[in-house]
Each structure stands twice: as structure tokens, then as C-alpha cells.
Length: 158
Image (cartoon, rainbow, N blue to C red; front, side, top):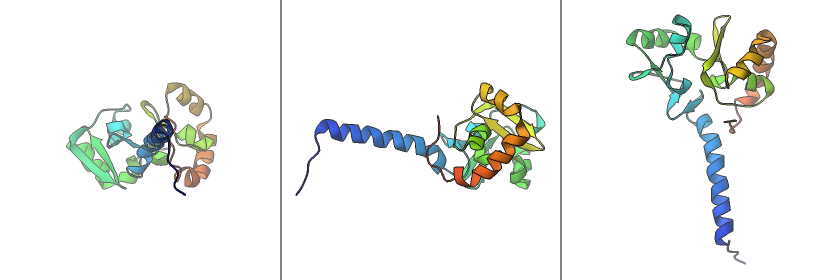
């Protein structure tokens, strides 16, 4: 027996599928949170360490790492990154570190970051960053424990 869907049911299913794909898309691009084709939302990973602030990268200075594209503000920063990408790449795939500690993937705001023990951690926004900053060592322990499971999640809290 063949069953046909009504037009409204079909459109609802199509809309649900589109939402599911939108949620999953950032996680599928590479190992790092990647929206619109750029890890760190196009910001220079090295600049977080050298300038202690997010700096927008340029397409002419790009490097691939673990399936993700990173952009840099200069050739020098690109070269620094490619020499030791694990040192400069954000923790937890560039997803929100606080979210990872809580067991889910969440987008980041490039302005909401912390360098702690020589590693880059990003957060959803500045309010979440304040919570994260209240006990970074404990949140890192939780996030490190959760990351193997969280990394396989396809939904991203936007």
C-alpha cells in the first residue's frame, strides 16, 4: 500500500530537515567549529596569543588543519600556526568550552575567549565567559571528560 503525504505535511517535514541540517552543518565541515567556511569564524588563532585579542584573518593567509580552514592576519602568523598547529588551535574543536563542560556543543563569540595554561578556550558569549572564568580548572576537567562524547554530537546550540 502506497501512502501519499499531504502538501502541508511534506512542507513541515522539509522544514524540519532544513533545521536539522542547519544545526549539523557547523560540525560537519571539519574537526573545528566552522561556520561559513572558517574555523574561529575567520579569526586568527595565533593573534589570540600574540595580541591577546581576536583579529580577523584574511583569505590570502590560510592553512588547513584537521579538515578545517584557518585564516590569519599575516603570513608570519600563518607560518607560526603551521609549525605547531596543536599549540594554537582552540580547545574542544573551537566550540564553547563551557558548553562542552556541560555536555553539549555550542557556537562561540570570538570576543569571548580565555588563554589559560597556554591554551585557547572560547565561549558562547561574554556572559558565559564570566561563568567559565569563575572556576576554569574545574570546567576544564569536566570538558576534558565530556569532549570524547560531545565531539561526536551533530547538533550545535546556536
